[in-house]
Every structure is written in structure tokens, then in C-alpha cells.
Amino acid sequence: MSQPVFTNTIKEYDTLINELTTQININKPENVVQFCFDFFLSRLPNESKGIDQEYVGIHPSDTEIQTSVFETKQPYFPTKEQLEHEEKEEEGEEEDNELYNLPQFKTHIQNRRISVSAESMQPKKLKSFHPEIPKSKVEQAMIRDSLSAHFLFKTIEEEQREQVIGIMQQKTFPEGARVIEQGAAGDYFYIVSSGTLDCLVDGQKVLSYERGGSFGELALMYNAPRAATLVATSPAVLWALDRISFRSVIMESNATKRSMHESFLREVPLFKSMETAEIHKIADALEPVRFEDGQVVLKQDDPGDNFYLIEEGKAVFYKTAPDGSQQKNLHY
Ligand SMILES: Nc1ncnc2c1ncn2[C@@H]1O[C@@H]2COP(=O)(O)O[C@H]2[C@H]1O
Image 1 (cartoon, rainbow, N blue to C red):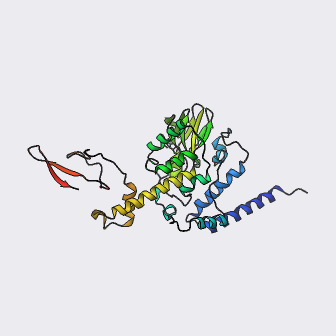
Image 2: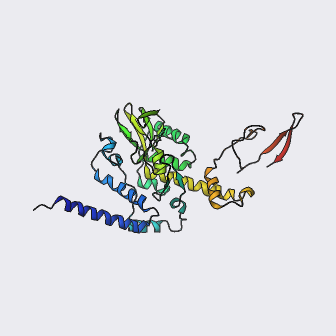
Image 3: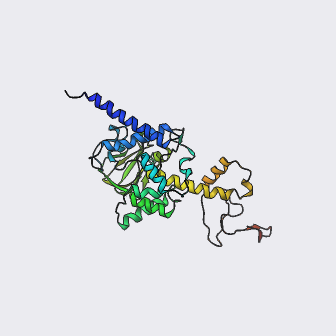
């Protein structure tokens, strides 16, 4: 007699839950709900084995997490053995706890705080988990330019940017394909290689994208549902960065930036009495600006829109005297 279908389902369910419990015991995540979400998301690709990694014509709304259709790499849920192996490998190396202890961002999408969770992979390992995808020099340059202009990627280390360029996967979509569906879970960050796409919020077109444009960062950054729908208005070829790599790179970059700025801020008398949390906020908001020798940073009587701290170099302050002459005032 054949086994009832539900028996198999229960078996599969039991296996999955046992595996999840093991992973929770190994990883001891701070945010269990997020961890469970990521775990189940990571298991979905297994279901789609054998499906071509490119667009297969399934409408994103056909499945809650349509990402599985396109996913080729699984998020990293190491076994106990893998973890032990890695610990040995990294013995002597400093643990970057910042990656697992990131600030909370306030998302404008749902107006609720969503923790940027422990889901990450150290950037130095990006390449070991994602094979380098060959690209022409022209495509590499286009991706590089696009990342360098992006508010999230422009401050990352060059080495990391090159790694990101290396692992981005190509995805093709026919005209009319809904690359991203508003409200769905985030899977990839995209850069347009060719074709055009419309961005719709609540069905209304707000923007269109062409070669070099990028989208899909919000859901990945804030762990929030997609804030808009992206429809290909012509056959499109996109470069895609998977969610785990995206978050690892962005978080690592923020953690490094914070620790660099924090130690610098602690030396500034104005900030000496501040609470650590306040220092963190300022450290996160600082952006490096370079000025050439002789370049004017700000002019007397200009509206004050930026506050500057000199990290490196020297500056001279001039004050305009009543007779119009420039008087050297202070020297920093
Ligand atoms: N006005 C907009 N509102 C929301 N998303 C937008 C808007 N304009 C462009 N987008 C992009 O559309 C993407 C949809 O997916 P994400 O929410 O991940 O990230 C979003 C942004 O990259």
C-alpha cells in the first residue's frame, strides 16, 4: 500500500524543523524570527533545483517568495562541523562582532523598526561561496561606475567593490516580466546591463531605468517588503547581487566606517562627553569629503549646511574686515 502523501509531508516537516533547531542551537541568533525566515528562504532554492536560473515565466505573485525561482545560491547556514572548521581557520584573527551587532534602521516603508539581523557572511568569503562570473571589461566598467555612484556602495573599499563586480550574476527577463513585485520579499539588488524597466508604486509609474541604473536595495537593507514593482519594458539583461552578499558588504562597510570614525570622534573635545550611542549616530552619518590644496571649503555668509571635522590636513580661516580685506583668523 502506498504511503499517504501527508506522512511524507510530516516527515519532511520534521526533518526541516529538526534542522532548523540544530541551526538555531549552533548560531544562537539574536533575532529568532528573522533567522527562521532566512532559514526557510534558504531552503526554497532546493525546491527549484533543475529549474533554469533565468526567468521561467512564473509571475512573482504566484509565490510568496518568488525569489526561489531565480535563486541559484543558498544563504549560508553552516553545519556544526563547518563552523568548527572555520573557527580553526580563523584562529588568531580578530572576530568582527560589529557584523552581528548592527544598528537598527528605521524604514520609511512601514514606519517600523526592523533589525538588520545577523544574516551575513564575512566579505572576505564572498568569493569562496560565489564563483566569479566572467564579464567583459566593458560590463565590469559599467558595474563599477554604477556602484561608485550609488549612495550605499560608493564608500566601500575598492577590493570589496571588485569582489562584488566579480560575483554579480546575469539574469535575463523578457519584455513585460515583473522583475520585482511590490510587497514581495527581497532577493537581489540589480544593475541594468541592457533594456529598460519601469518602476511602479501602487501601480503608478514613478521612474524608469536603463543601462547603468540600479534598484532593489531598500528591501535588502531594511529587511522590508519590496517598496515598488519593476517591470521590464523591453527585453532586459540585469546583473544581480544576492541578498546575503549585499548585506555582508554593506554591513561590513558600515561597521568599518563606524569604528574608524568613532575613534576619531573620541579625540574631538566637543564630543568627549557624549554617550556612545550618540557618538555612533554621528560616526554613521559622517561622510569623507576631499579638498585640494587651496580649495575653498566654505565662505563667510554662506548658509551653513554642513559641519566639518578635519580628519587629515590643515585649514586656514579668513575673516573679511570692514575694509573688505581678508584677515587670517585661525589656523587648524
Ligand atoms: N519612489 C520609489 N519608491 C520605492 N522604491 C523605489 C522608488 N523609486 C525607485 N525605487 C526602487 O524600486 C525598488 C523596489 O524594490 P526595493 O524596495 O528593494 O528597492 C526599491 C528602489 O530601489
